[in-house]
Amino acid sequence: MNPLPHLQRTGGGAQLIVEGAPFLMLAGEVHNSSSSSLAYMERIWERMAALHCNTALTPISWELIEPTEGEFDFTLVDGLLEGARRHNLRLVPLWFGAFKNGRSTYAPEWVKTNSQRFVHAQSHPGHDVLPLSCFCEETIEADARAFAALMRHLREVDAEQQTVIMVQVENEVGLMRAPRDFSAPAERVFAQPVPSSLVDYLSTHTKTLHPALSQIQFDDTPSMTWSDMFGGDANEAFMSWGFGRFVGRVAEAGRAEYPLPHFANAWLVQYDGQPAGEYPNGGPVSRMMDIWRAAAPAIEFLAPDIYIDDFAGVCADYARPGNPLFIPEARRDHTAAAGAFYAIAEHSALGFSPFGIESIGGAASETIAGPVADASLGIQTDPSGLLLAQTYRLLSDMTPIIAQHQNTGAMRGILQKTTPDLGLEIGGYRLQVKFPTPLNPGQPPAGGLIIALGEGDYLVAGFSFSVQFHPAPGSPGEVDFLEISDGDYRDGEWLPGRRLNGDEYGVRLGAAPSTRRVRVYQHNPPI
Ligand code: DGJ
Image (cartoon, rainbow, N blue to C red):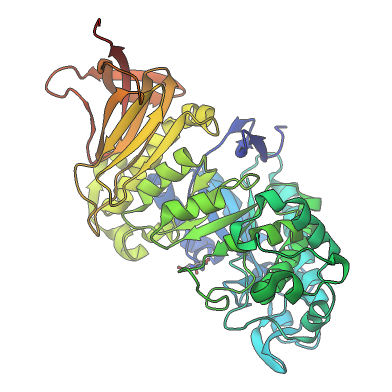
């Protein structure tokens, strides 16, 4: 049997290893309700395969696997495994347990209706709200037992085939519209000093703390309150500890049964200075990431759901040492294809996954029945879907060469921003990436990657940009091409197509994703 899917840490980043080789998740997340019906999933599997996805992110909810306490029904889970296998897809289950988007809508009926045992959060003292309290021990234990049962089942039925490659624990946790949880179990924790394991973690990681936490006071640590230590961030720090412990304990129980990589996802801060509670208070937003890492060591990384415009900024914020980047949710619009290229190349992301993949460009029923945009791909889709399908196909073909260059500094990602060009230094030369078409709302931003295979030797892939080559800064002379070819990467081999030395001279990539092999040299005229 192959070793289980796992993260292999390399050069400050990590790669997901599946069946012994690096695996890039060219993924899509289905709508929340789709995977609750195997019949409904049928056409979605087909659509995902046509989009050249290799991985599906599908919710599995607590209420459907444990409708009665202690009695588990894995029919749906087994059907999802079977459907994914039939379409050559890997699966990343999303555990919709006690928390989903700051709410508790996926908890089973026997949990929802027993508030004596499963304590609700309080948004101010004495005021219960619908979401459960993450500090309630009964809830932690019941959720962890159910998740452990799921992971045990997956080990029993899938350890051989390894269709499931990673697991997301809960979904966008945090408490909405509350400064913090004031329920009795929360108050008990808040009244105690900051736990020593959190203090120890933060005080031994001062050099790498997120700038938002760099002002922490460490005086008199054994008896410091949350306010002493975190000042104005005390409530959010406390909630981050609470949700981090909850998710960490659930993950621990799952990993004990089946040690696949486990991660948690974040609903992001939407604008600078946005108060916690407008986004889920206590979720793994980047400014609270260090608290989460102390609270949830069983969670291997924290992942951003990126719907805001500053895609590149969020990637940089999450791709921190020890936290490989994976984007479980992103916009499924015209920006998706460029996002996939950029995250995977610039930040060595483990993968990329637009949300609501089955309705890329519109409602599922419209697009599945919509016009055939490219018969050769065999998919019926809109332009955003077509571009993503072409991008995924290209990235899939290039996976071995991309994987070889992730986390090495020899690969850069391209994502068009408002500036007309982008300067890069890679492979011994200065490269100027130009965007011939200005960024227009509704038009796909250019996206791509450049790999320096050696000095003056490049692979360029992507769409809607050109590249010029210049001597390294301070170096005299002129640069010209030895070779520009189009072609394809297949199974790690470059298969050259045309040699582009005439009217097509130069490295110019059109609106459909394509690849060039480029070799340049520098001519230094005699002095
Ligand atoms: C983020 C959530 O994590 C998803 O489950 C889904 O509700 C999307 N938002 C909808 O945009």
